Length: 340
Image (cartoon, rainbow, N blue to C red; front, side, top):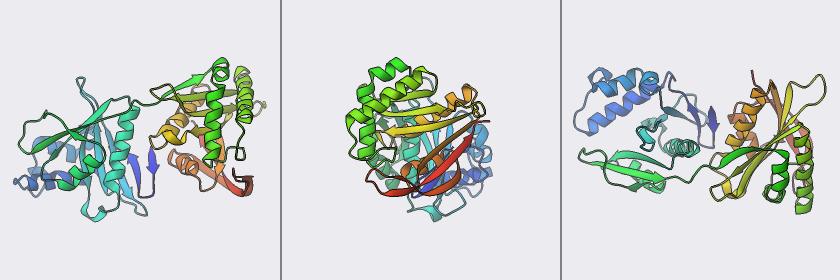
């Protein structure tokens, strides 16, 4: 999976050819800071040498993320999110940005994605350690909400930090009756999307009754097996997002479906919920025999960036295809994704 933002492209790949070099640089710099400088990977302690020589094996159970600066073709940083072990929270390790790639937001981008993934896994907390002389990383961790906790590592000068995570939003597929029962909340979600500028087929201001009527029709389509609906709720039971998958009913198109109405409430954005909703719909489509998905979205919108980063292929752009919520005609980009 590859994610893009304004500063960097983030990808998960423990076998990336540039990862050994990044980890080697991290460990060599760390040993120098500790006063036990070595000049080659061969001189590193065995555990660190193993990471630099074969990170795919060393981190086989973990998540390894790399960051490439915008406009560059070579990763400039990395971080490892260790899998939870023996009931302990996941731990962030090996945050490193090469000197030539610093001051570009890579460390923050890597940390944000590691924290998002930890929360999405259901972890209630994440932890890390940092040497007390590393002032810049320590400032970053504190800015991200980490606090000092009792040490689990007795090495002198090592600070132990932990950050509590909000429970990840729960995503579930709704039967037709559940869509009807939650029509008011789903309608409010649609109104919020339109008010926030999302081009999802309506003009602003959207009448809640019109939004509710759309979901009533969606419930009937769900009952008829034409549309699948997923909804997300936070830890307080509030609806935070939704997405639907529409199945093609023509005889020659039953292999195909369309992603429609991907919605994330403005108060719930920035924690990867849209990506999780999209992934849920994609997984269900593949599991139920669909081999091709299509969608369209306003060109230049945040949704377009999401689809690109989630592996969707641009098919083309149509000028003046649809009006945005303010009534201005905008171009639309068509996307497709093969599921086989």
